[in-house]
Amino acid sequence: MNADTDSETGTGAMVERLARRGRVAQRAVSQLDTAAKALALNAAAAAIRDYAPSILAANARDVAAAQAKGLPPATLDRLALDEARLDAIVATVEAVAALPDPVGEEIDRRAAPAGMTLVRRRVPVGVIGIIYESRPNVTVDAAALCVMAGNAALLRGGSDAVQSNSALHAAFVQGLARAGVPEDAVQLLPTQDRAAVGAMLRAAGLIDMIVPRGGKDLVARVQADARVPVLAHLDGICHTYVHAAADPAMAEAVVLDAKMRRPGICGATETLLLDAAFPAAQRVLAALLEAGCELRGDARARAIDPRVGEASAGDWDAEYLDAILAVAVVDGPDAAMAHIAAHSSGHTDAIVTADSAVAARFLAEVDSAIVMHNASTQFADGGEFGLGAEIGIATGRLHARGPVALEGLTTYKWQVLGNGEVRG
Image 1 (cartoon, rainbow, N blue to C red):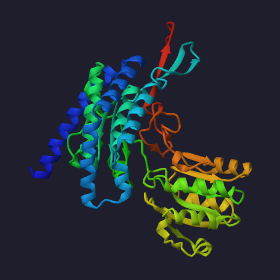
Image 2 (image 1 turned 120 degrees about the vertical axis):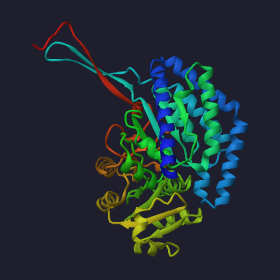
Image 3 (image 1 turned 180 degrees about the vertical axis):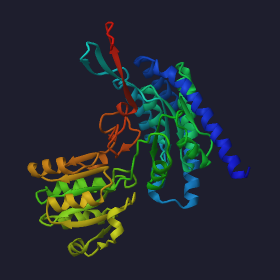
C-alpha cells in the first residue's frame, strides 16, 4: 500500500469515526426541546465572548500567514476578525437561539381516502457536513443553525482560517457542554488533508447532506464526486440593472453599495447593466471610479466615460470578489434580462427603477434564487432576511433555495394516524 493510499485510508477511517459519533450526538440533539436548544446556543455565545481575546489572537496569526502568502485583499477581508465582527458572530448565535423552532412543525394535515389522518411534520436532516473556505464566521453560523434545527454538524474549514476555526469551535462546544449538550454535536475535522473532503463526499449513510460553501472549484468538485446529497452554494455572479426610469440618486447609492460595501462577499454585484435610456449613467460610473472601483465595459460603456477599461468575453462570467465591475449598456428590460439569463449564476439579481410594471416583470421573469427591486444585492444574507444566519445561499431548485437557515436544514416525515384500517 503506497503512502497516498495509507493517507486516504487513515483519513477515511477518521471521517467515519467522527460521523458515527456525530450520529449518536444528533439523536440526543433531535430530542431536545426548543428551550434546551436555545439555552445551549446562548451558552455557546457566552463562551465565544469569554474567549474573545484568544479567538482574535488566533485569527491574527491566520491573517499574518495569509498576508505572507500574498493573498488578495478581498480574501483577507473575508478572513479577518476584529471585536466588532466577533460581537456580530455572538449576536448571530443569540439571534438563532431566539428564532422559532421548525422541528416538529406541522406542515399540513389531511384525510386519506381510507380514513386515516395524514400529518407531515418537520424533522432534522441528521448529520450535515459543511465544507467551506476562508470565512471563520461560517464555523459558528453553521454550528448554531445545525444545533437549533436538531442536527449534528461535521465541519471542514479552509487552511487559511485553521487557527481561527479551531478557536471558535473550541469555545462553541465548551458552551454546548456547559448546557449538557454533547460536544460531538459539532465536530471540526482536525486535518487539512484534502483526502478528508473526499472521505466526507463518500460517506453515504453516515453523512446525510453536504453543504459546500466556497469558490467555484470547490463546489464543482463536491458536485462531481459526492455520493451524499449536496445543497450547493454556487458562485455569486450578481447583476444590478439600472432601468431608464431609475431615480439617479437612488441608482448611484444602490450601485455603490452593491459593489463597494464589501466587494469580497458572494452578494456583491459583479456586473452593472445600464439602460441606454438612463440619463445619469455617467454619474453612476463616476461615483464608482471615484470610490476606487475598476470598471471593465463594452464599447457603449466606454463611450460614456473614457476611464472605463475594455471588457473581455470572460468578464461577463467573472466573480471578481474584488473592487472590479463589468459594465454593459443594454436596450431596455428585455435585453437586460437576456443578459442575466445568459450570465447569471442564479444567486441574486436586482433592478433599480421607479416603474412598478417593469419591476414586476423583472421580479417574475428573472430566474434567480433572490431577485430584488430598488435594493442593494448585498442584502442577500440570511441575517438580513430575518433568518438569524445562513449556512449558504442555495442556487439550485431542490429542497431549499436562497439563504439556507433553519427551515432549509430540516426535512419532513409523514405520520399516519389510523383507527384500525387495513388494506385487505
